[in-house]
View 1 (cartoon, one colour):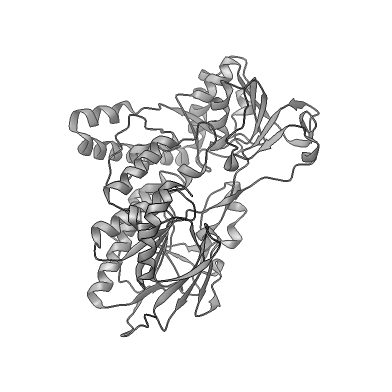
View 2 (spheres, rainbow, N blue to C red):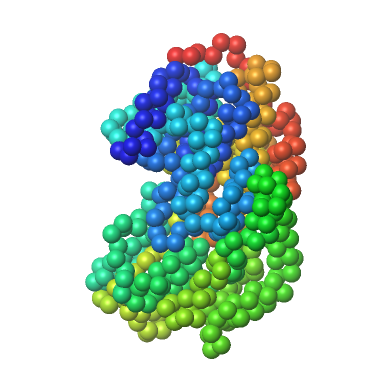
Length: 505
């Protein structure tokens, strides 16, 4: 076990024995650490712990170790509203983001609140006791224990962090080289002087290719379907100037507002005027690539801009690698793996010593936990998201999902504010639980209206959303200012309950 996990566990384990807790936060990633800040500042009297299944904090930013891993959102909006991002990099690499998260933990003295190597594998709500009972597996010993809590804040993201998505490739056993998935990057992988094929065209692929190109003999990005790729400066010159001139706090606030507005304008223009947007992106790509490069084959997606998330490349590093000749792009379908590489359906063979399957992630809510109520299983696909914060029929449970078309954390912050307002109301009225109640006849649609493959593969297992507020999963800051920051905490859809003497056993 790491030294980071030893000391905090002893103190936090003592908190677990002081039951029931007011809140259990699942996950010590960017969402869970954010939630802990709001609980610490808005409800300092509440007892809470953060259960982290791994040995270290940081979530995504500690788990993924592939070359070049970075954000694809600018940190002036991806950072917390309450903590300025001071680093000059706006499109920042993972170590810098991890440093920021460690600082946030230290600022709020959360070290003793985090229990490492603890994974909640099931949760059962008792109407009689007005409590959740979590079954928690200890990763260091294999034992399980029960933890009782009034609330659960699920800051687990929506990916399966144990296993990435890899299609079944014919002939995979025939390949004599090494096959690697970015989610499980070997620490000792030596790709110097080797031919590498990266399968994929998403954020991971466009990060890996230029990062590996400097050391590998050659890196080929093999994509079945092109993606919109846009260059952005790694450093936000305006934001850095504002912070230098006005100070970190004020400069960060203005930079954040500037970038939120900028993201909104770009998204809306792409949605409203897809053809001009496509032409602008194409022209930008063409200007950064060799003159004879086939832009219309390799950077011409069959969908409109922002129908799926745009891929960001800082300082145009992907285009620079292609122009330099250390990387190339192939667009085609895989027929099979062969001993020396990959055979495409057109008969071409791409030689490879290493194949990286940057083919995406599997979507999974709550880390795969089993939820139940009074011993009866809860089918998440039968629930409906309320304000993107709670689920119908699931009391005292917060669903933490950020934006898919903007910086994740922008939504998480307002979601935490809403949660804290509900806690305040319950303290004032003596309520012991609250749950959204949906009309069974209400029209619903998929929870995430997003065309990415990882979303489509999981839609039948996810909650739904409605077609009208407050049952919509909004994906815009301005909409959530109304729905969350100013949204009602006592409307006709929220059912508060007060049980005078819940059992504290």
